[in-house]
Image 1 (tube, rainbow, N blue to C red):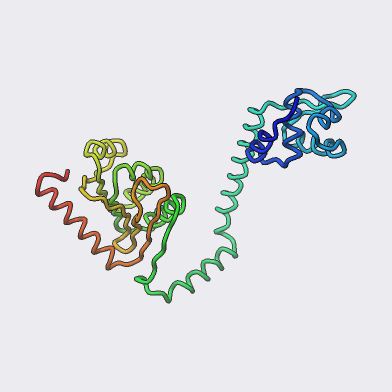
Image 2 (cartoon, rainbow, N blue to C red):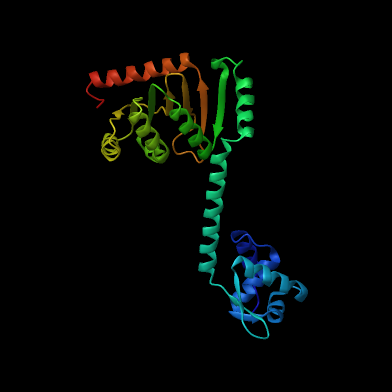
Length: 266
């Protein structure tokens, strides 16, 4: 059997293997059970390296040593390998999360906070702005902004955008409500969809005729989107400015009042 080089290149990245490991594993899969000599001949990997590579694959769960002489190796099903990789990735992620969680109790973290506070205190609040790019960065900033609210959360966005960010928004909103933080929601889009979101998440969002997408905390901080809802990559601006945020809130409240008076807002 001739091993397809394009296949080797493709699966090399998927399974985080080097070129020799990939060739040896593919060759072993094609035989099911084989000796190091057979694998070397089939894979094109030097025989002197094949032994080391097979030993490495065995330790990582890609192969099993068959008892007996001569020593042979049994290929592990790709599905089992994938499950093992997934399990290892989850364990590594959990360990990393645990390590990061414990970091806050260390002296190093305390010193980092001191450095940050000493650097940011002299800056006037109205001068603090930041550009955010990418969904993960925006969601991270959004969670922190809303979690830090002590009096009021004000969200104005499209119903589609709200649903898209619901996994990040709903837990924060629920926690804020329990802590007596006032939560105000204004969603644009189809009225029926707004009603469904209200029922699904037990909310009291108002329907608004506006394309604005912004998230505010305590009328001091605001994160607003500067790209259309269907953009491939979101971009947003974070601004710490009580004057600007309070002004934007008044504009939105006026829109809602006008809609209510005209029988449009619900």
